[in-house]
Picture (cartoon, rainbow over the protein chains, first blue to last red):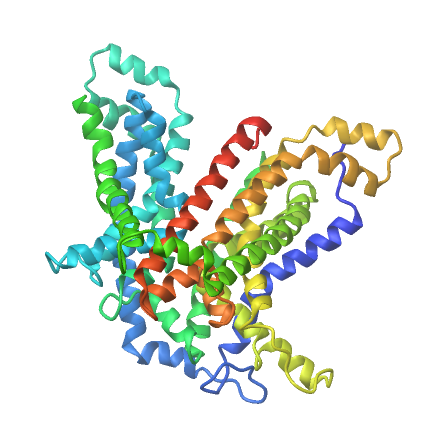
Length: 269
Length: 270
């Protein structure tokens, strides 16, 4: 028998929620074409000046490039450490496993503002002894982001590990494989999709990170979200609309492709 | 032992040095700045200004939790049980906002709701309004922005709950002639109660620590606890109070998470 389909009331309400979810994203588009210097809706004349300013003002390119570099390095560091950690828990099953896991997930569950203040304390303390790994530096932001995004990588990789057949690892061990061999030749090949999705997710999380970044940067390490924040606070700069449309286009393209592929696959099978 | 150290060590070292230890430092700030003692906690719990911020935070979080879980409930129902086309469309409407940065989403609401925004320009050009409605830079704007941010987070656990529903119970209800409304209220809702509670706790915990959306959409007027921390650290410095409010937030979230875990164990939310 066919499952009970949602009735008209639920369908209409759900459609309204779906529209609500898309509304602010769509609203960004017309505003980005305003000819004015302030946030407004274009009426007679549509202009590309705010897209132009994304190219003309070097701050945007600098912020984007900085965010990409920070995202890549912190994604690599956090996914690397998370892979070792999650695999270690899976292979060794140490005592106090819950305690280790609790610490590993702490930055994800703590309120963002608490993490932000904590990392601010950490980096200004370091600033007193060195100027490389410090407040408002590239390395400082990378480290702070790595702390914040590592829990997400731990979750994704642990999920991937939970789907491996433990017997393949036992077989390798009984035939005398070392821990290193088991890790590299047996386990990693089996969780490679988990590791790749962790890399992707951690990059995106770092790329978008603003809560912590706001606390730990000021004028030197200005990432793209930090730059957008500065344009949003006081006088709203319509260039934010233009950059938003660009970011929106990227997300829509990626999500659309991925979702369509999944749905096609599902209807095939 | 060396294996444990080599595999678990690096991440534990990073988090221990860059998170646990500095958190203890924040704890110390809260009891030493400006002078040693529990003065800042006393201030946080008695100062009318700070108290009003806490009350506003609780009020906004409660409203946001109820609205976003209710909205997520109906939209997830269609996402899980609708026709293939409905499922695809709803999935896009949930995933696209989810992946978009919180700044773009907050900006979108400004573009839509501010005085020169789309909604006001449209209503004024139609002659419905003589002067623009104030929809952002106030509590209403904060709630709208937070609900928008949190619906996907409520939708994911709810989807898991809906997928685990026993179809036969719904069939039985229909077979015995129950109306759609009755099936919804008397069968569907009670069967998904644990999932709803789990989603509500999750949303509430997220909402408590929120500060980017309220800072942008509240325009400094309806300050919430997390934003207060930011203001006390960077704008009107009172580091001790900022630290104390952080610690209070951390304790609240810790208690709620403990509740959530107990709930999860008892109700099978996950």
